[in-house]
Image (cartoon, rainbow, N blue to C red; front, side):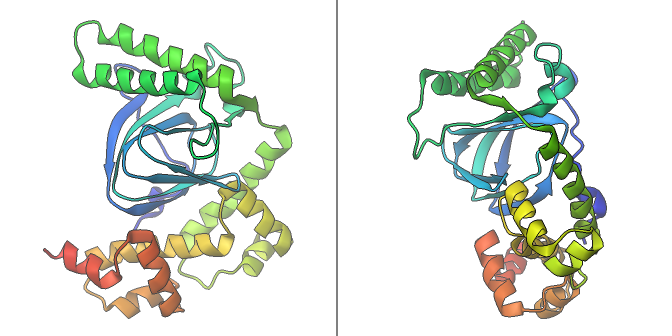
Length: 277
């Protein structure tokens, strides 16, 4: 089963030479549960589709589209097969150039609905170029990489940033404690009502707050967390599929099977069969 260390606050190890984390991610269809980190995260999709969910919104990204997730924001992702550039910049680095960067939030245009400006395309080119520079590591790459990264940050902050209110930051902090509890007790019969009682919320308020912060309902999230553990148990154990669903807190197996296929694009049987090849 997935260990608790896989959850909650994501610890990021920066690339030692540049002080940020930069890499090309190649992923199969799947789901990454709600998490947060003390980095500004920028993701540019090179191929495929990735959907980010946070602050009551879903952002579906396709080729040459990017998202910026501020420090401390609770977010999750679902994705089809994709290849993406990922840049994660610690707020301690950004603070040298822009004060109170941990409170910055970003409103990035939606390419399907909004008119894109020169700044958007400039950021896309900078992200692609700086990643190529880093991967090639030609002489002088540190100068070029850092120059392009700071230039990209300048365009992102001056065009798309705004500051988060203090009250919202406090509510987010409370919700992180609830998430830690869910990730530990996911196999128990948790409900909105039981979680609200445990953390001293009114159930209706907790439902609204969770959807506002996470971009999905609390009930849906409970299913996704349980299905993530089910996915791993299908690969790592020989238990019968129905038993695995029960062990991980999914008592409505029919609905669980339906959501599992939506999340992983295969049935549990197909996932197990592929893992045995």
